[in-house]
Image (cartoon, one colour):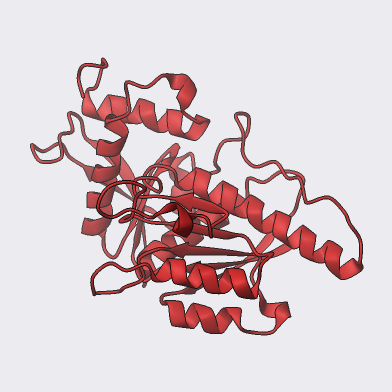
Amino acid sequence: MNISILVVDDRLPIAEGFKAKFERCIQNFREVDINAEIKILTDADSAVASLSESPEHQPDVLFTDIDLSGDGGPDKAGVALARFARNMLPDMPIVGYSGYFGEQGDHDLGEEDRRVFDRWWPKGGPIGRLAEIANETLLLALESKRRRMSKARGSHANPCEVQGFGEDNPLLTPTSEQEFHDAGYTKRFIEPTEENGLVVPFAVWAKESDEGVELEVMGCGALFTWGEDYIEAEALLIELIRDYKSSLSASDETFSPSMLKAKRFVQSVTGFRNSGEI
């Protein structure tokens, strides 16, 4: 099945990072052979123009950041884009995410704004949940595609029921040094410093492109970051590890399989051993 995803983010490296995660997650779906066209745009105006194209070019899901302000102050252009898309393509699922707007506090997104999205990931949501976000977005795209196909045939078939990754099928990621080398990654090491709070060094795998640097911990698909250069990608990874550490006292049952692997890794590199040690 061919699906189309439109990703909108004013920071190209972030958009490229989500694209890479979508492409990897696609390999993990069972029962359906998926080919995906993932289009990236960096501003709301371009997205509006794209969504206004002929029906055969309409995406199966819109995946957009909320703050599309570029270098200016934060805005809610992603919400305005979502409203436009909802009016023009009412059957198309819309997923919104943000590293700036939450649901409480000074920079909140009110209920009326959130209601325009089929799925909303607030500030803090994307951190450490990339696998879950990618999986749910792909499921929405598949269901949307099946509905469109059924409508075109004049039938009333049920929405596509597809299994994503589960406990017996964790997020696909290179699991050996050879696999990382074959995929174009190079190994680098992050050493403990007073600033990063690590207690032991660990290896990461970096993949550079014209758009930026992808950084991943082997065996921990949920520990993945993307930056404009290696320095930014490493800083984001350290921030991600800190975020994980703040939740290590939670029960293992609250973690997905991929997240549980990340939890074990963070415990080992931060020296966390008990709930009073955050």
